[in-house]
Length: 270
Image 1 (cartoon, rainbow, N blue to C red):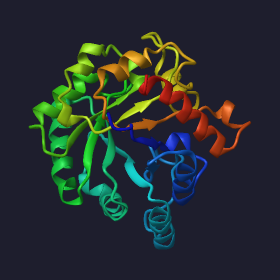
Image 2: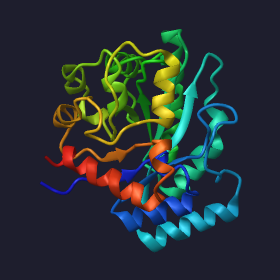
Image 3: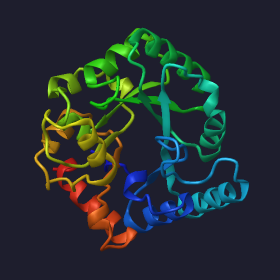
């Protein structure tokens, strides 16, 4: 079996510029990085690259020097007034970076409209060579794996459609291992690994806080990370997404990336 491919997710390297993240990935054993070039909420943290040609040139040069690729870009949110061309600059930069995917969140409670807009997004993104990976998150309109699969299939399963599985959201939604196994292989392009306390009794505020500030290293929580990755394809790239602001305050980005990868390998390569 060929070795697993690992990506240093944005949340694991949020202290870095895109070029710095690529350098850290190269130094610590990752083949790819994930970059957040569009904030997940107005004014929220992001990496600056759009409409910054000098920073893009530096990032491309660092890619060339290190051989580290870009796995995914963040983030497109599909709301009730969605226009896929809002993100044209993101598509252009993604193509320049040869990114493989863009992470998509569904925020529209009208599922028929959300489905239609997801199909529109896939169509607009098609010329840029990236997949549109819909991530289920229990506080969004796409709460679990079944919902994500239903939306993608009702959108016509476009060639560049995808479903993103995050261990955190698996552990805090009604998603079962059978639901994971039911996702067609062609819709899976990568999965995110971390840990936390599992359960369905968290408030939205608690879930968002954990996701953005307080994830745990694989093995430090009680999500069944092992069973999840056993259920996913054995050759699926793994995005290591562990942000823990308290832990990171006492360690360098390089040491944190190294520890995150080491703990992830324990579950992914078991």
